[in-house]
Length: 457
Image 1 (cartoon, rainbow, N blue to C red):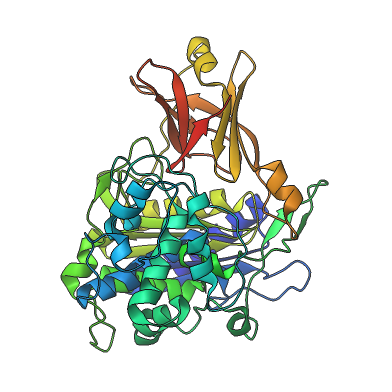
Image 2: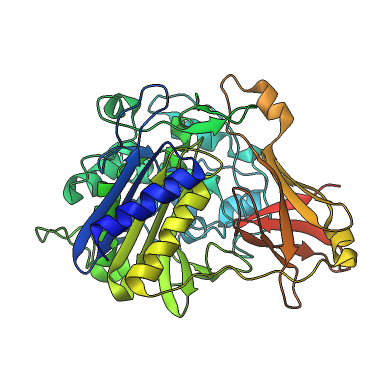
């Protein structure tokens, strides 16, 4: 498939979804291809190119985990060790969890930690230490190892482990372990490094539907390990090629042993009812698509979205970056699906829901709490909708604009004996999840995008 064909698809799809600026990269048949379209900002428009930096959101977690695995390879961190070996000051809401949670529990989201909390702990070198000091406020959703539940807080804690072991700030440690040896010249955390280069800003629709620049560009330094990296399509494709390789740079320098790099792409815990994956590796979501194993991670911030997907057995990778909500996610998904089909011959189709089940609907309708957010399942007798938003009290207390929520979108029950569902419209279209029940069969929680929310009403 030619560069022109990719560019035509990207331009048409960005136009369809109303995205101001996008950058796409594909690694296939030993070659790189790029397709960039649009502008960095509707207020101060500059053309997007392969080196334009976007906020990656949770794709950052793949860098944090890889940096940690470099320390594992060096014998400086033991995956099975309790986190307190490296962060002895760790305190959580329950002492037993704080004492027993391991490094691996953090890396594969089995620590029993809630998603996280919104906390501005400053921009100083103590930002992560101050974040960790607030962890006793974090909701715990179960004992370590009991189940997987995606946790931003867990990866911020990994960042603190990296600081304690290396004696460096998290950002400096990642730059030394990864950015510099791999030649990632457009990958930075500090705003001072980003502002002297071309970067994209996020956009969200206003009440009139017109896109406006998102004024909170990214969250605070204490969230950097879980979601604060800014990078470009070109750097992300180089990053993907490293993870498809043998742990060495293009010049032959070993960053980590091949077997350690490979271990990151092997299943550590199964996932149920998730469109993101069938299992967690180490940070990576692992998913079989049309009989082919894929390795990937996505990211969402305030009006910016990223998607990175690898197919190791085909030496293939695709990255898609977009700068507008809520359609940035479906744009990225469309690009990834198109690239898989046209370059790998793999067709990724969403499962189809069964007809509306009124009795089941009555069981799941309710309000669910997920740390700083709420999830509302509502029904009108003919169908169900799912809504997600930041809690009103948190919005009211914020000194800057927070990302918008997701308006009610239709969901449908999936076939089978379980309580799995799929979102069938809106910015989260295609996302799958499931409801959990107690020993009496009463619905007590809902999983969305690998994160658990507890029923409160």
